[in-house]
Amino acid sequence: MTSAMRFDPSFPSGSGPAAARPDFNDEHSAQLAGQIYGVSRRNLPPLIQLLAFSTAARHLNFTRAAAELSLTQSAVSRQIGALEGMLGVALFQRHIGGVALTPVGEAYLSQVRSGLDTLESATKDLIARERCSDVLTLAIHPTFGTKWLIPRLAQFRKLHPRVTINLVARHYAFDFAATPEIDAAILYGAEDWPGSTVVQMERLMGEHTVVVCAPHALGARQRPMVPNELLGELLLHHSTRPSAWQDWFSGAGVESLSVPAGPQFEHFDMTLQAAKAGLGFAVMPDFLLDGEFSDDRLIIPPGLPRIKSRHDYHFVFPKGRGDRRPVRLFRMWLTEQVRQFVISAL
Image (tube, rainbow, N blue to C red; front, side, top):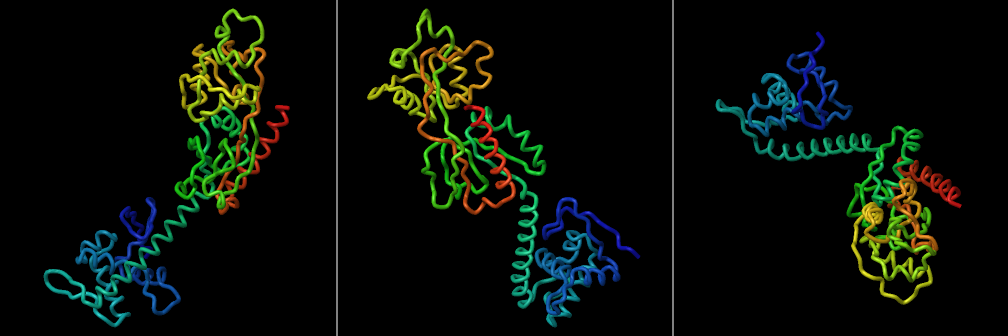
């Protein structure tokens, strides 16, 4: 007779939430279990016997162990009896009030539990690796992600539908060893990444910055501006790039100055909206400004130069992860996207 299948969400040793397994309550099923869970090594008991022993030892009660394993009390007793017969020792002392482990049983239990824990951990790790094998967690500057990367991700998804990309916000270089959940990063900055000996950095592209403001911020001015004039204006600052204005002035030929203080904003998007609202002048990477001039709320003041930034954008990943399929596929795709973007910007 075919043994019935039962669902038991409490079944240990790595069964998934939708696991089904045989009912070993009858003698035929118990024999079948020995065939299923047994192995060729003669001194290794079937797994069902070890599970019955470990569970009964935890409860010190065959009935409660049977309930947890979805077996009958007699099936648990038979499995443990078969294990004791194979070992040639008594693992439990039976008495009217219940059972107790023998000294041999206590010593054996410690080793069995360790083995079952190792088997369960290995199974869970394997399942997790398989489920996550096509997931790429990417750290990225929020505005770069919003303005440049995310609009292009549909193309990547079309090419590689099985790869899932998760984005997390980062403004600065970080230690991959302290954040093992992150596979790679795209960030702006110098080539001084923490733990640089164990990460691989690949330059993606540079950037240029421009000054932007609301049209009415120019007042009645009719002629082109010169960089020095900005020193008398309210300058909007980006807190994660505190040297942005200093770098722009230096690139524009205005040296040895103290940049006037002004309101600070954490994200480029905030700085951009503040400029559109007429709060002051902002310095922005020009490639983040696509589509921002269509509503006539933002302009680049005539006469002010486009300045190359000091640093570049890099793709960074731990050296041991470069061969992971999602990292490898994304890296190849990203390189091509940057190539096309750079050509179009010429």
